[in-house]
Image (tube, rainbow, N blue to C red; front, top):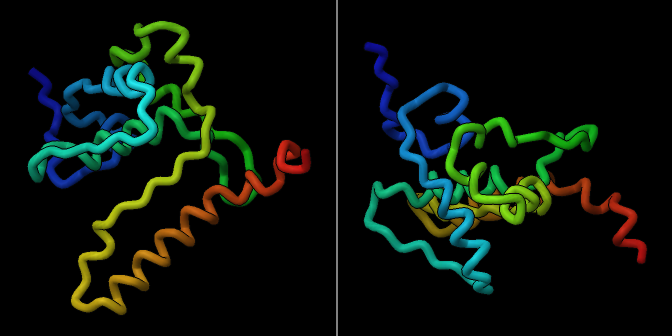
Length: 143
């Protein structure tokens, strides 16, 4: 019998799917978020309950991900093949890969002092800006 490895310490959805780790399908959370239509969603769970992994899954679903250098669009739909969200209906699937997603984690702020924590947060914000530079070239901004 072939057993998949447990993703201990891995909270990146793409890594878990691509490297074939054991994964409990929580993809219908995406449908709940779309149906909820809330301006803000707060995810509160105890430590080690998969908050970061769920956020990562949401990011890979919604994000219009582009290559940093040439701006070519990346298709992440392969990550969701065989998951429940793919059978939820076209009104959900049509939102896949359509939005710029800003994903900031406060994990980087766990530092020994305030100055270092602030530096790490600024660097994380800067990296998100760089990931989304393609938006500045979008003709819709000129309107």
